[in-house]
Length: 442
Ligand SMILES: Cc1cc2nc3c(=O)[nH]c(=O)nc-3n(C[C@H](O)[C@H](O)[C@H](O)COP(=O)(O)O)c2cc1C
Image (tube, rainbow, N blue to C red; front, side, top):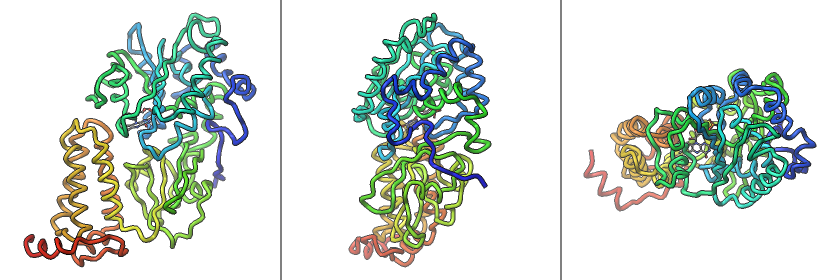
């Protein structure tokens, strides 16, 4: 059984300040860029990222090497790289911390990606509220420009790539890749149909490699230390580490960000983040952030990795993990999540715009003691209809809170509907409505 510990591959140890170029170089910074540009072809860089099985860390886990191979092979004189440092889920702190603490590793990753796919222009797309992170990147870019690590004729070769930094805040949907491309072009931020995928026809219809900031920050490590070193932690399917933002069950709990190898059992991950609750004090662990699923504590020994988490009904998503206290009514929890998500839907796809709202409406009826047995079947219908009719991942994942609550706590729903009781006594029923409704509806 491997021992799982907190790691410092991208986040860096407290006190290991690598924000300045000289300090970053002391810890091996830009050695990967030197190695790649002077000794390796772009195809070799893509091959190493492929061999490392580096998965997209923005939530979906697509293989980065595969994406880059398509971008590289698509013939065009102009190609782009986009670094997604947005953190759609405002409770995630991974992208912000990476920009603030390790801006040169992000820049090195972007330039390596550009070299690999043949791009001469890149965009770093951050949330405009990340003031300190954006400042840190701007300062790092200024230093990198002076040393010819970015911009024209990088390291004295004929490879050039500029990085544009953009700060935007349009809520949750600003993290979605086609929304970001629309915003860069000055259009309204709504998702587009795929295919064609950005790797084939992205920004201004040009081949575009769009990757999460954490994905890109891992690339220098693969090139500098080699594929075997990168794969020395993590699982066979998902090598490497993940930044996870953990929230304890207390209402005023502050987020803690940990970097852990994929495969770390959830229970270990929580204790690495300093969480020490007894199971009896808790109801559930929510994995994947705002669109994540709630899992019962019996699942705490599950490894943190894409497949097991998704099979259990949650997602890696924004990598936010939250604990729910023992007195949580899971109908009320699913309602609160669905309400929030219905506000964040961009509204382009009717099933997402209306479906998530209907889910919230039905759940509101159930917690108000207005529920009827038929509601459960209608909720199941919406849980299928919304993902099937949505253009982007937002609609695909939006019913997760509802589905996981129904899957693991069906008794909370039936108790509300059949006994007009909240299982934890925390929901406030609308009594007057209950009286009328129970006589009118079947
Ligand atoms: C609603 C929504 C929000 C998203 N938010 C983010 C985000 O904040 N950061 C991110 O990297 N990817 C986000 N994604 C995924 C991106 O669309 C895209 O797949 C990702 O940036 C690709 O990078 P990766 O392959 O390195 O993960 C989001 C997707 C959706 C549907």
